[in-house]
Image (cartoon, rainbow, N blue to C red):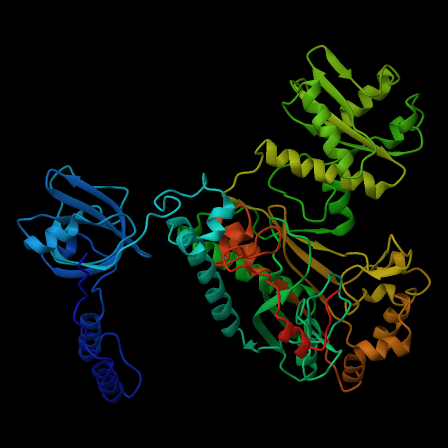
Length: 633
């Protein structure tokens, strides 16, 4: 096969043109300047294409153009070859007719197959009447090819590129990610991500923020998740840690007087994978001085509201609440059962503990009894409710009491005949149930277990029943979290957020006496069942920080060894400050309507935290291990 390539102008000639442009415009070209326009025309001449495949319209009819891209589809209609040529910007139909092209070019075109890389030179023509393609932005025109160049042939891909990929196994897509990225859906997802990040940078720059990079090789610190460790060759037996977040460094930037900091930060956590997690992820890391909680919430809410509205055409989502909902943590757990609820649908938890405490049904006698009402599901079979019971048990419930509300009244299982008519009536009233609904109840001495199990069950039913509209964005601020929670393994107090989160001022006097009662200045932003941002007002006084460390069981010697740089910094005039870190991956996933964050990351890891395209992780050589002064077990 003969492959031809276009003639190109040298890079030296391009540099001369750029130099002339800078001299002419004093380094600040005006896009309306004729010289600047001629420069753009000149640079297009030395490129493989004068226009993108999504650019041409009926106004270009009669122009001679050059296009380059991949063959999306090829059709042979009676000696005339039709090609849909694709690049990142769209599709253009190219007509290769022997009456317009040379014999050699037409013969070469007969060998063209999908995914060949092509360059076409031709004339833009209006499509014949009645032949417009409304599904293509360029559907009113076609390019009549004069010259055809095959820049690179292609093997037959392991899967079709011109579909949406839903029927392709994800492992196959990840193995050939460079092919998967050619899909329109993936290109759109990455475009949404790009627009989001660029908008964040511009929005914060306009409000006086500085983008500051912080180190990737950092110190190991106990901030919750397991860290990735990096052995040091220069310091035998010692390790760096990849940052879970730049938490301490951004606080030190506030001590350094930066006042308004941000970065698009890469973070690393060695956690079990799920739909909204990756071992390496990206967040918009932010910190501000001389502010309180409402200042940060207003800033982030404004950023996301403006992005949502400015780019609605790109992502197709709309805000359900303006301003965003705002609820305290305790109320969120009582109403929804999880601290990241999907508030696009109701199905809130209800309580019947008082009405059932004297019940003959033993599990209800000394327990917290709460439930949810699932509208229109009284036709569920025993097999279906058994499946829900199994799910609830996996979520921490001891069992699930199911009650059917039909035209004849309430039928029940689990509780047998031991619920009185008064108890059934009280349950129906609390549930707001009507004929056709299904009532699900959980009982336990531990109120948190009841809320958690019902919260997960509510979330699962919301997905199964498709209760939420995918085009809606239900943002919710969760505030007033507990400062401390009990560690289930040790029984000791642990920081609910992290140990630098400030308790609310009204709890400081009684902090050591009753840590469990203290509420903190932590805040999370939730959207459609995902936590998309988390932050807090920080402790900026050394005495308060030391008190918190003592409650967490850190001796001053241990605290100073791990956080001495922070304690020392607080003695040099640390300002009041706070921050937040919206997750770029999760926000992009939600705006793109993607099922997981792997769909908005160019080269993600799979659910086993492996890159099957690159073969990562992979063994180190003996020499590498020896140089790092470590030994493998």
